[in-house]
Image 1 (cartoon, helix red, strand yellow):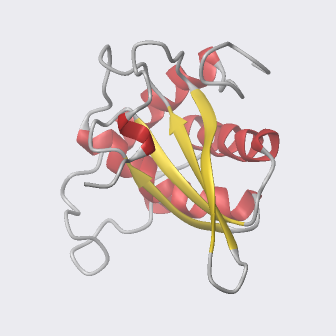
Image 2 (cartoon, rainbow, N blue to C red):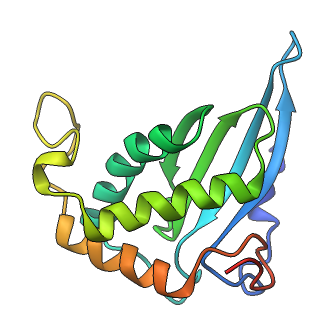
Length: 157
């Protein structure tokens, strides 16, 4: 089996919340894709309930695109502690952290249920499993701690 970087990361040593560049890959034509680890809660100590995580996912998919260019995808980890953020090029960690922080602030303070995309059977494969209340509360908790620019030390918060 291929080695997967996230399975070699010492999850007991990281200090969430943080955003961390996992790595970059170049395609056959030279296109670069960057993969980031956006960890919102401390691994093996907390997990975001699926309804809240699902709502955060749908909102970040739109809100982050409004704040930074090049977002390809933002996908939740199965452990429910955060997201993979896949982007074109090699964006600056600081710029990405700022876009995510601003997006979480919008979730915590401004977004209404009508703003949440993909909340019906047509546009979501599990539309019943959403919680704006949970998304707000978890966003507030992450914002209180700040998103570090380093996985192992509290930097830039």
